[in-house]
Image (cartoon, rainbow, N blue to C red; front, side, top):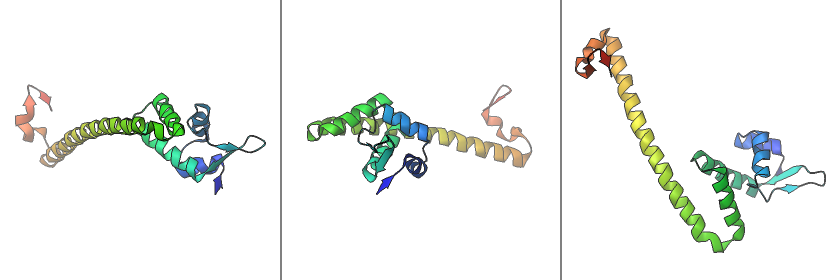
Length: 136
């Protein structure tokens, strides 16, 4: 099955300019074009775009994503490099998740703090958490 750029944009919740940018940057080198230059996307292009979005949302740079795509086009000779890239990115995401876990713990604590203060009608209920006039 083939898809237009608009259909792909809608399907992946991307903008058409984003897809054009990815194409311009060489991230989707296998996208075919009609005689008049219209991009025609296949299911395999959509799968690649899903990987690109995953890597991008994990914080990987466009330059590094492009390198990954170049390695994919090399084939089996680049398997180790691609594996290493994903192992490294996994570590990056695990660190982000730990940081987010800590952030969520603090947010949950503050939600509880303010709920208790609201129910009591005062922050004085948390006297042990005060340093001077500063409430934490």
